[in-house]
Length: 88
Image 1 (tube, helix red, strand yellow):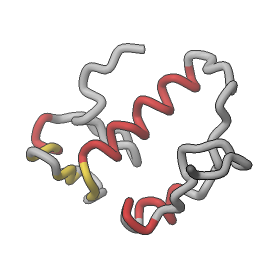
Image 2 (cartoon, rainbow, N blue to C red):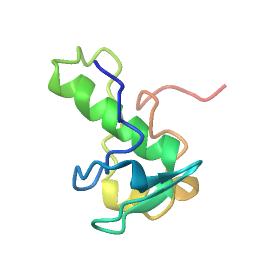
Image 3 (cartoon, rainbow, N blue to C red):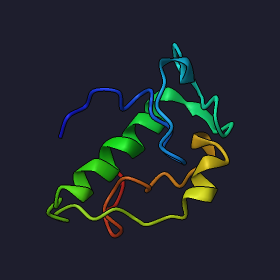
């Protein structure tokens, strides 16, 4: 998948502009979505990978995005791990 602009595209609505990103902070100038820029970019990469037929070999815990958007620090620690894996 092409990683260009994943850190400038809003993961909530898809609005793309360089003005959305200011160093580590992401703030969509269109819809107001706000979070750490790396978290927003990771969502865009995941969505693009799944759209290209991601294998599902490492399924994610499908936690509702609304809960994650409340703040990446409040997201489940297992958000990007297999559901039954133990954290070492």
